[in-house]
Image (cartoon, rainbow, N blue to C red; front, side):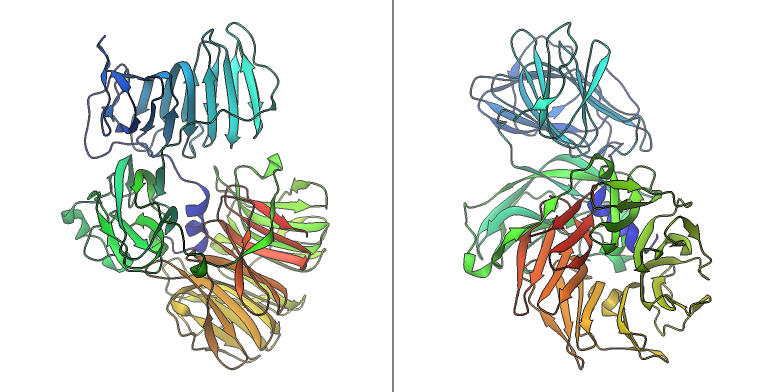
Length: 639
């Protein structure tokens, strides 16, 4: 099990498809396969009817009804419904809609899946989990054409004469009719009449679809904040609606919210569990900064022990999420409680803007650095191949660079536009001389996570062995790279310094190391949390951010030159990166699209401009800041 920060990043980036059965085999309809995934009617509002495969009778649909290939579902006037598929994807049916489940296929746990829906009339809204395997398909067939999705949100509208309109709400959507395929940009619509080709995409807003409130909880992600706010003492319910996940795709099958069997659970190392009393894969929750709540498939009622938003996750530690797979969906019910604004951070009136360049889609960015506002570099990996990538921004557009490695990239730093270093998995180290990237010998085959230097002749890189038995520190003296004695066995995740004799490295278990120009020594951090990022403006003003090693929440530490102390962040999201332009202008980014800003007195939230997790942040000045992360997210702040 790789203990690398990069693999953990994938929790925010790609949610792989669930390609197998949920706890048993169910007879399939028109398309029989070795695995028959569980698909259920999750939410019913009004009169919803089901015609089972092979039958001509329509019967009243109830919440929790199992669906299979060949079934038809329709909503009467004023009624709405939600169907949750085996991978946690959902489709909402508006009033007066009829669909058929033409194919629900997943032949094995490692082969592509197919979800094919026939839509006769009405309006549907699809929220589809990212399809990693290029052979996997999610399609809606109508009389006029086929709308295909690869991990996106779309709305399909079919009127009485069969005319079909396909709206792209988010992600990658195609519409094919009469052998002609068009790609629909986000915020646009394409229309086709029966027997005609699809129209050129035009800006368009989809009709309102009665959303169900179903929330997908991903196995590759840690604590995931929901929109349900509760006051202490409030009762709430978490109703399982479908989907399945695996706590280890290499050794265990797919299960539901009750996790793996107790017999199997005895064979797994308990050190990675969040909750020791329930199996791996069990659904657990937490309200605000309160205690762990054992959710599973109990439904509820549960009681909030403190005030705050409800967060949910799989019972598996942050450091062992990388080998998980799948998602489940739940419906949340609780009192209509409004947050007490006095307990919430004050949001900045300004915010970041999302870069929507098509070249960014399908990628994850782990690091960002620039020489100027018109010379910015981002490094990471492609979401499908997991091959390392580097993009460069010239002030107008992003371009892909040729790098000569397939290893995932994690850290970047440079002293000038013609002297830039990038590090990554398996000890990969790249150097850019202003013209081309070349591979260097790094003197290690372990994962390198971060790099920083005081000059071109004084550079430090940190990382860890894959078994977590050694904190790696490398040093470049202007001639060659060499290993340094780190004096720690803990993973190291970030490095920064104010001078050649004042360098800090941070990592798991609250590890903080300091280099005085002669040797590395441990510092007292006062925490056992995972410290992911570090930055400072001077030797007496240093910030480190991270997330809790057990439970939810995050941590921000500040060093005043003498001691490290904890700061109030005002958010429960884990944090990954930190950077600032001055002691009173510091940015921190993390899970749940979090961006925090420190003005010298307190941290406050900012509008991030994205729904995706953010991993790293850098700027050339207080008025030119970039934050990068999952699902092609690059957001910029230019007030």
